[in-house]
Length: 574
Image (cartoon, rainbow, N blue to C red; front, side):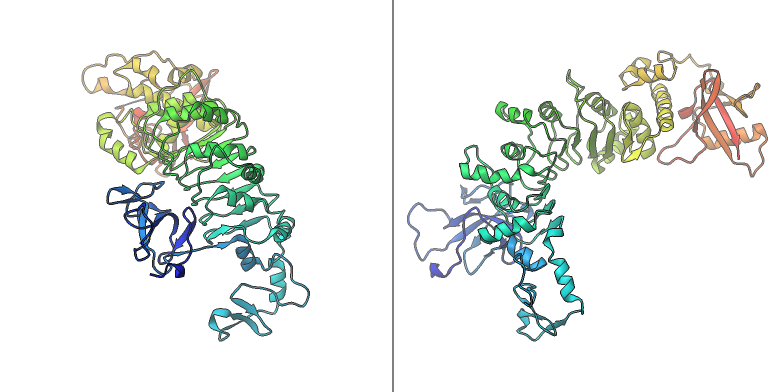
């Protein structure tokens, strides 16, 4: 085999798989199995690659029990026979810019505008180079003006080059100076799904965007920085110091690698690390924690979709990020939150836990204890958690988090005293009051046989005091027979009604039955719509709280959910 005719590839560089166009990193070039002796010119050469998507891999760099190369993710490696051109190179950023916007160096007057390397303009239209002049695309009359507007790089604020196979900046120093001048207005640059191999290439590009604030590099693969970088590399990485928002979702990175990057992003406020399957361990050494201690600017950390399952590791990170205000742990396998330690994270105001694996209400109480000043919460159960709750619900439903949206919202609101929004919906003062009163009755009714357990429910005792309810009351021993199981309700036609009527029902009675009995009691017409309000006494006045006659989804609401023996119900007709 004539080795001189083969393309030149470099270990550590990134390419496209020639057949599938899947992005890969080249990890090995040589024979299989590896040999220490000089390569026989007649032997077959193999390329060891790592796919960005592990599902396309065949192994983890192992051949006949020999570790030929290492992969970031298990099962993401493969071997390709080095024949023909198995890997394809990408292009540089300068090429991408000029293909989309025209030349970076403006054309002299009278010259035809440049469209792309294989597309040219003439008097009739656009000639597609690949057609050898046989295909001419007609252009509109205002084509030149459109090209001029599109090529006005100075007015751009956002530039996106996702999935274009960019490997480097490209161009010379003179062109770089022109780019710095013309692109100073760009604030957001998207370089996701490209072939940049390291932070040096990223920094070289960032140098050309002096106004850059947001940099998106998601779905990329970068070489990890080292502790001992050359001075010129450190100086180049200084171009990242103006970035305030960085997207590194699905970059197969780790928290240790992030810590090495921190000195070069001192002004970062928002860091996206979602879907990094390699982030399963948040534990750092003492020196790395000291780096976090000095990182005061970070306000928002998003770790959704990472493989985090230990709350203690989350707590350790939070101890050292004193400026952090927003945390996202959505779609993580976190299934347990212990009680709060002596340290509370009062700086955390926003928390997201969508697709959660938490099953028990006590864990939500512990989150409330850890984040006492939380004002925004996003929470939902994963499909697996819902299945587990459904399977176990008949045995222990009270302690398990409900999948009913209405019931879940009411209980969550009650557990977080400073919450302003839940699942992006604002909590009004009246909704909070309704939820807290409902919560008191909910806990009371489900702990009737064990009143001492009520204090274990987050904020139960506190809310009883706030709303003037007796948190120590126990149920009286019921009379024998059906009558002893019934509760009595005082039915008022209006707030100042001096002589309420009385109804007796079983706690298990439906709200529909209650409406029917109230309708007969007050002799309402068949066309009348009834509103049945729970009430509280405020300084001797009866105030409406919740209209229980409204349709509610997700639960079998009964009289016993809303009322205890001796409670009052206010009737409104419309």
